[in-house]
Length: 237
Image (cartoon, rainbow, N blue to C red):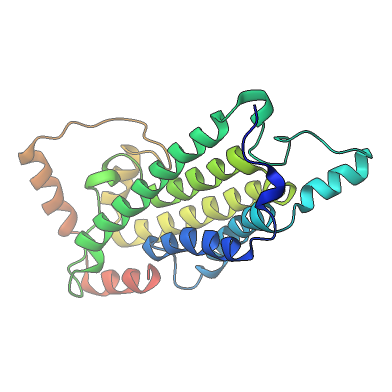
């Protein structure tokens, strides 16, 4: 299958900057720890840059592979749209779907956090269990995983293949750290929340009627102490 010639992609440095900027915008919607936010943000930006550099700048992975093998590989093997010769545009189409899912998860997660936690006055922030948080505890980190997996499906590079497991470990450890602090703040309410939700993927679908939903929100709000809520809000900026 032939698509646009891959050679035509390179040397477009404005496109490198634009690609990185577009995906970097989503970092503004993620509740990273104030003290630990630099590492996950930097890792994600580095991953995006590794893709943009070789998609629009210089095909470093292809140069490396060609040098080792002594010959060029066909379009689609760490070059051009990943595996386009073998599976057509399936990788690109799946990537587009994952980008949409990832964006939806990140923005919906931010909306719920902002409405029920960040926008509240000191001491009134509640444990967020509504919206997408009814099903998973870290929807925004799942959204970033969708982005990065989609990027590899569309245009894999050697640095991306090395960096993805590292990126996954960084976000997993960050999520664990966040959960430890939420447990300190919300106690039994957070333990109950963990028991009925998945960390990054949904485990159960809960059908809550309006009355039980209001009752659970009231119970959660009653567990929030002013000092603890303010401290947690400082961490999650």
